[in-house]
Amino acid sequence: MSLKLKTAPLVEPISKTEAKLHLRLDSESFADNIATTQSIFPGDHVIATGYSLVGTAVDVLGKSVIVNLSCGTNGTGGTVDVKLQDSDDNVTFTDVTSGAFTQVTEANDNATYEKAYTGGKHYLRAVVTVGTATCDFGVDIITSDSDTTEDTELDILIESARQYCEDFQNRAYINQTWELWLDEWPDRDYIEIPKPPLYCPSVTAGSFVTGTTYRILTVGTTDFTLIGAASNTVGVVFAATGTGSGTGTATISGVIKYYGTDDTEYTMCEDTADLFIDEKSEPARICLAYGKSWPSTTLRSYNSICVTFACGYGTAGSDVPEKIRNAILLLIAHLYEHREAVSDKQLNSVPFAVEALLWQDRTF
Image (tube, rainbow, N blue to C red; front, side, top):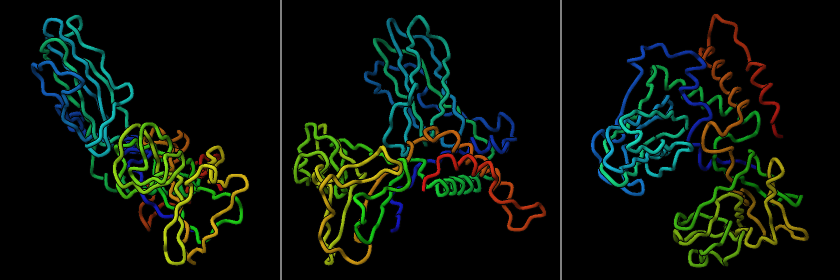
């Protein structure tokens, strides 16, 4: 058995800001730490429907963030609706939870409104709907740019601490994708999926990537047979030949491929009567249905079965349980304090408190 990381997590459970606060590293002046960037330039803005006024995105990763909406005078009957959106790649943006400002009307214009951003995404922007009349306003994104002298070292320590904790617990924290390779079918009627919690990221038709293998979650109005599926049936595995259309959804998680002696590739899960995913168990399992058996195809002698699965608590550090985050912070502090191979200080193993916190939800 072997595991291969296919898609690494995009963020860490602990941001640099959180690590610096824990280590008490910020020592610069307030003026040196603060940076202001205009997302929406100040001035008169004409009517814009459906949040079509899109602001400049700002890099906020690892920073403390405040967004200021500075309002001048609204035109007669004019309204301003501002909401925040964030992104990992500066391409695909989603609405920030509780990221909408109170609507500005003539009754509450000529004022400044403030909202903190506590998400863990890389980029942040404002989008605006201007209704009825031209309105005067601007949106500034204010970041606390703390001391960056040791940022590279902190990045390494944060990642190392996260990897240690994940390996100790045999878990995945931030969403990631793995391949589990087996040489033969198990003697039992299920395949155990490591690195809980398992999750099945849903991709809607229109966003399928050609050449990627998916498992159908919901059919909806999508004709999956037009993009490579054998049938329009929940559970069918297919290699997408196009992006698709309609409302159907599919996932990359829980897909099983296996290879014959001539390296011919086959897939399982083409009929939900054969397999089902047991997500209630931890670790999760891909199970044979009652009376079913593993394929009889003669397998090649090595790495003959590949199970693709996605795992993790979510896409943001705040999705990870707090006691795990606390353990990572404690370990970061330990690694920071003992960075040298040779030291006049007494070197200690990983602090007891770290493993005490991690033992509670360790899987085997």
